[in-house]
Length: 290
Length: 227
Image 1: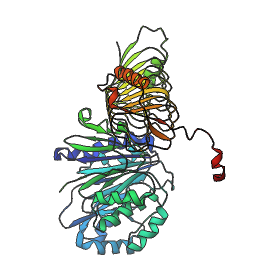
Image 2 (image 1 turned 90 degrees about the vertical axis):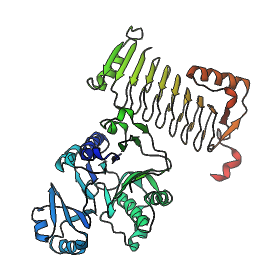
Image 3 (image 1 turned 135 degrees about the vertical axis):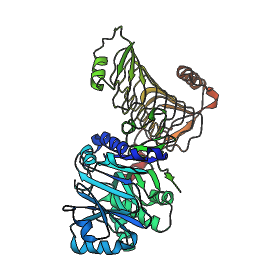
Image 4 (image 1 turned 30 degrees about the vertical axis):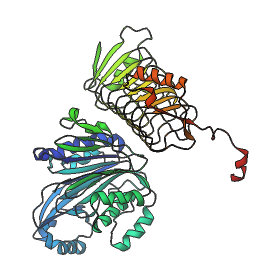
């Protein structure tokens, strides 16, 4: 199983509510994935600044020790806001002084959180309901291909401001990993979904648009999948050609929403009047703002 | 009319109340408010009820239905009217995958589209879809009729037995052992009756009929070398 939710805001007046809406959607999907949960939120970003999301313990003094960094601790995660030009120094400092901390997301606007536990609890621990942003995606996991660990929780991020959640399983992830690693795509886990994220990162790096990268995935990824993908300004959905895993979408003037089941969308404003539809198999649905 | 608000009443309580009704009940008219996409709504009915669901329903809505008429004023999730035996289920919106799967009887009407595997392994049900249907529909269909006013996706009727498929629009591709067949008078009469029953605005002569070539029924001795 696994549950996926996604919300892409069109109406800026709704941006302060992104986290609260996403938290509600995530909690409903507990039945599909009670093992662990995670989410990525695209919030504010400063010119020339980047955010690194770190996971670990003893996070309180890290920002001060690094210097020239703003840190926000939420439970087991720390978001460091630094000058983009300072990224190499900060990563170097972390590798040397705090090798126990894992960088799970990086980019201008992305913040990424994941933990083992019931989705509603995970959302509460990180205060998802208090977050604002333009779009966010979330995942509730029922583990099949690898262990119930925080490392195995989604979303996976393998490129700046990119993240992916996956319902399904891939059968050629080993061979794809062998193809991608020599091309400079780094993986932190043995998880099949992380390979899908890495594949898209590679395509995007080679100049593909988000839609083109997903189109190419239809040929290269073997297995079952419903993906929801986020980039700094975009949001996309793709299902495998036999639509093995469920998906429902809703669109209004104010947002585009995705859920593994319609139940996840019930709490959204104006859902009664939304255009509710099932995304077709092997067809890329993408929204991007300029 | 009995009105049950699922924002207040748990779904199991609703289904329990409906299951407890005797076949000759006088409480035949029901309306379900705030369904909120819940699963297994009004599944297992076994009395001549008229149930209206005022919104979107989740998986297996009206599954195993006998005798009842269920109208859904919204979309339905996977497996609407799965294994229906008799009665009528009418979806005013779209249906997700496997609509009418394995159903033995009754009439399933979908005003919008139905996605993949509509009528999979159908065993006698009649299904009328006023929109289009997704890929792999009527897979291993055994009997009954599937009427589609719009288009059909890939591999229509793969490994079909004796169900009759009527499609007005384009068929993207036919599955193994499914072929176009001649539309004779008996088929036009059946189709005309189904279109009337579903309240569908279409003429039988606009449709093409598809069915089994009957080449997969039995082991063929000429193929023995392949095993």
